[in-house]
Amino acid sequence: MTSPTPAAAELVQRAAGVIAAKHRGDLGGAEELLAAFGSEQAKSLGFYLLADLSLGLLRAQSGQSMDDLVRELSLLVAVTATPPDS
View 1 (cartoon, helix red, strand yellow):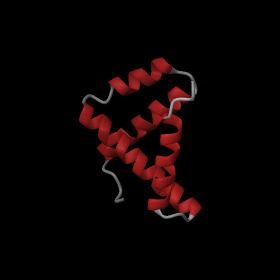
View 2: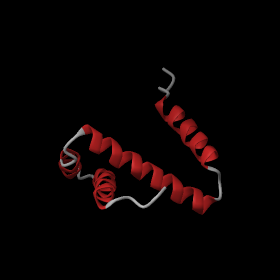
View 3: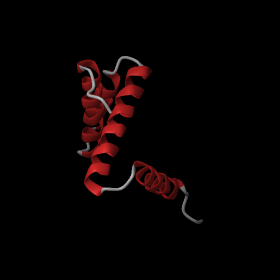
View 4: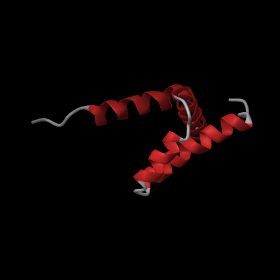
């Protein structure tokens, strides 16, 4: 991934802020940051760039291929999205 423009970097930082706020229990702050995106397109771009950057960092640290990381992530999402047995 090439270096993001200042506007794109701001979107990435805002997306990371949403996640950080949510994880520290600041749901109001997360909602404010989400509302600050201005458009669905900006929100989508910010979270896409954040995911791409995060996976790139993880790939560099783990030595795994991007395909392997995405496969592992997909399996994790499938497991967590499956409702427990009744």
